[in-house]
Length: 206
Image (cartoon, rainbow, N blue to C red; front, side, top):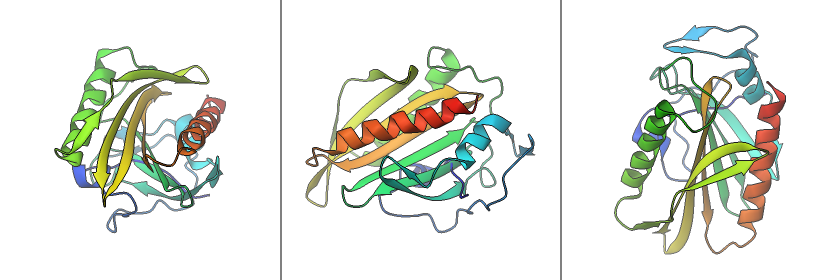
């Protein structure tokens, strides 16, 4: 089973859709069966197992290798990309702790707000000046809360929508970054189904 997870620099964290960092190590297929420290990140056995056991296909999006950013910058964790090439959808799932311990579940605490605020600032910097942002929302998938920020911008003469959704679950931050063509009307249904299935897998690994 391939693996999944999070990015260290602004370029890696919000790089262009379709580009894959060449210098980020791919996690091997050995399942971590114990809690073990790497840098500042102590892996929670349950959440890591959930990420490693995610299926290769979620709601029609095909999974890619899990990428390990923890070795480069402790606290930044891991990421895994999922793609639907026909609908031009790219989803990156990140799991990390930011070098923190005792992370509370949910979105209603100061630590979470600090981490989320940095995510929004990084995304704004990545998009530059030619973008618009919808009002921030709280959304729920299978009763799990996420803060969602939605941006629209023009790339290669096409309107793109980029969403960043973030929560904290089982001792880690979970961030989902989604890029799709705004004009593809079926994209929202596909993304909604992806999120529901993703959260279902995470909640099974309590």
